[in-house]
Image (cartoon, rainbow, N blue to C red; front, side, top):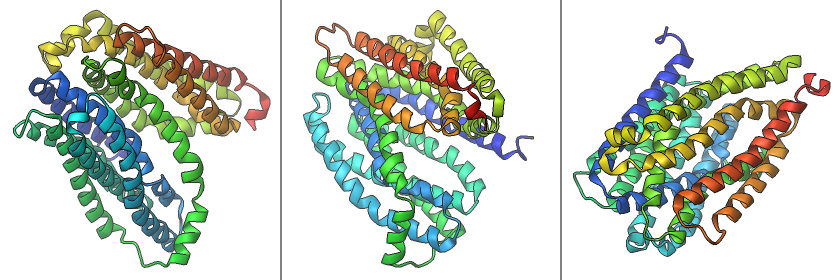
Length: 409
């Protein structure tokens, strides 16, 4: 069954990749101290944000281009824009790294390695979408193993080089360069783009302008909101190990949910799209089904989380469980709201989500920078609760009005 069902193969490949990366984390956490992992956590948070901007999200349009010549025009346009956008966002990231109390000592090396990692990631994702547009799904499934495995294995290799954050970020950069090289080679063999012209590229930009104008800001807003806490903590608590604990906990807690969400999202969204007059019932059913396993995992963390963290990552990381519990609540909210997100296009409410995300980001920032916090965990918990209250209230509203007859057309 697993060998013939592409959806199950995709889930299995994603799970295998996450297992390799998780194993790499278990090795890395025993080799590096809190300071090195805190520095890496800051850079990794920046990487998650700026890698989205490096391609302007234009690569997403490849799967919607039906004509080969149109697809090729968009490919060449994106290929040209990626280095330019990487230089711009990399410069902004370098300024932040230089001013951050936890990364200033290695700012120059970290900034350059981050730019290389961003360029590699953007190039890799561009060629992944080219393979998907050419319906080379076997390579797309292979990608689910390739990318996380490269990160995990090369960061394990970095433990033999040095015990500094530069070695870890260097491994990240090298993994993305190799990732881009492998995906680029596969894409050029299986879906070689044809020649194009400047005029055709301009037309491709016009056809796909919605991705940089609308998709990019919304995705950036969500990612910035998620990364705001680890990026702000060094300024609030410069000498603490909070970012290291936060990063380790987030990797441990988000990885299983990511496998589940990325694997099942298309099927859930499709089922929601054809729900008709059962839209509200399907939202509720999927919310319970997706939130249930996460709630069970939270119960396990509450009962024996510190022991599990010490076993998995080393004796010095038991305190990461406190952050894991808080972030686990965020994961629970994200998973339970997944079907409501899928209902937004059906209900014509996509623009509402952007407004709510803006409100959530503002509220989260306001909470983080309130004076008087005495511990990083307080900041993480309070900002998470406020954000979930706003987002949860919105999705509760979505569920309530999902029963209206106008959404059932």
